[in-house]
Amino acid sequence: MTETAYYDITIIGGGPVGLFAATYARMRLAKTQIIESLDQLGGQVSTLFPAKKIYDIPGFYEISGEDLIKNFEKQTLAFKPDIFLGETVLGFEKTPEGFLIKTSKRTTYSRSIIIAAGIGAFEPRRLTLDNASQLEGKQLRYFVTDPTTFAGKDLAIAGGGDSAIDWALTLYPQAKSVHLIHRRDKFRALESNLAKLKETKTNFETPYTIKELSPVATDKLTITLQKVRSQETKSITVDHLLVNYGFVSDNKIISSWGLEMQNRAIKVNQAQETNIPGVYAIGDSAYHEGKIDLIATGLGEAPNAVNNALLYVYPEKRQPAHSTQLIKAFNQAQKK
Image (cartoon, rainbow, N blue to C red; front, side, top):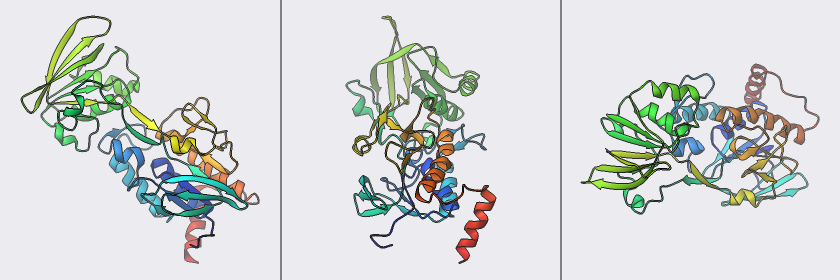
């Protein structure tokens, strides 16, 4: 592709939502590229919880993050979009035919842009205790790359959201014991998963916060818990502490692109369009009133953004047919 050639759609972000947007764009025969800042596809799922079971993907009772991304990759690669990894979009500017996009490696051109970059750069919300950093990667962990690490071990999980509950469900069958630490008696997790966890012998340590961490020998950890609004304390000794307090995101680069932001995301209308015509946002990158941040939500937003982007680029094109007709047209185009 020459420097002045234009893509129809450039998708910024190679997570599940970006991958499905590319798949659908190629179904519609749009010349499409994905630009992903990481060295692999999969976004947060591949980076943060490849081993975790996910329960809110349509068509799967449960699926690991790793298997989910493998399925998305297989589907997307079959439609042959151009994919550029390890490349960060620094900014873009309007041209008569679309946009000039400046990345950390090159200049490229596109008639429309779909931002599927999630929450931007991210890192876990860490414990603020003095010795926490010294224990990180040993008894204290924020990520799970290999669930077998916890087989036959006493495990404490801190957090009250979906991630903490999901990990407790996933690791309970192989762990020797599981303690769930949360500062409230109520949880912010999916009710059905919480109900499943309560049917196990998980020890619910509520309402407690972590006051102190004390290493025992080289492989154990004593956690001192303090009851909320009380001086009462208790201690538990485990092999590992897995903290799920969420993540701190940094979307400074995205914030510099002249897009209207709300709730730390890009404000979009019903067409997933931003305040800049021809630029769309989907998934965790996008905000509209009533939005629920689930992968399933972003998957529904992807075709909406693609169709509206192509309507913007090619106003004369009719709206798409069903997927079977799109696939037939794609296959015919590949034979030419």
